[in-house]
Length: 330
Picture 1 (cartoon, one colour):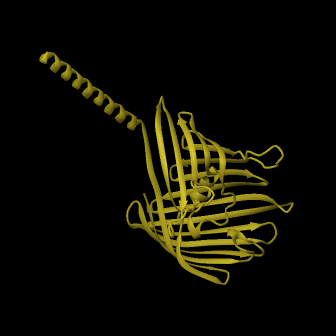
Picture 2 (cartoon, rainbow, N blue to C red):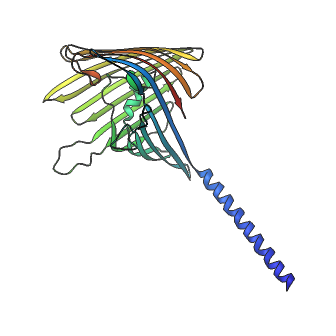
Picture 3 (cartoon, rainbow, N blue to C red):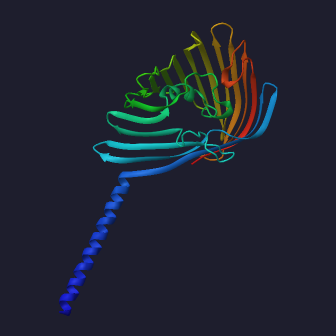
């Protein structure tokens, strides 16, 4: 009886060990098939901003955010992904968008050999193909962000498709459903973007249509050694008070890498039909302390004239700013 009991106990223990091993292997395999990462950026600057005749000095946020990004391998080349991103004010710890916690991005996507299908809330692809790629000095964030480009739209209820890369070419299209009631006149928003990379050159094209407005733009970027030069031209139109208004925007930017940093300069010009016009220019320097951390200093001016009101300013109002800050990506 003792021998039999010992055999039973030994057999039971072996089964438990085997089961535990199987569970551990399964958990490891499941973990290998899926992952969730936390990422973000803290960007804070000491700034002196003069708008019109009023000057404000302070410590300001400059495009900080954090988010969660995950992916699961479904097999047969399919992958399910998601991304949730929230903009935060690094100077006081508050959420930038009080109406939506994950206001920067809230999307689910499915990718495979066919490309990528995305659904949720995210910025229009044409913006990333044009203005974001041409903003060499600070990734188009903060007080020095491009104030002239028309059509930066972070829309809800967006459905997008991005093609696989074909000899350096990718194309992405999207529609933002406004989920309107039958008795309203709201329109869906449409967006189309293309990027083509070949050698030292990169090209972008974008088209957007929302409400009564539409825009289309072209970009070119050239990189050789320490030099990067980029620029775009955009044409847009909108209906204001029943009148169709058209605007042209042209921007050029240059960056020169020197040691652990880069020198930057860019200039943009916008003109509407008639005499309204605006200029924006920025000079600055980035110094990289590591791959994820940099300190920077920028000086920027936005000048409205002849009735222009770009950058959220009043007609003919100007803005001058000096920024010294630090950015850390995690």
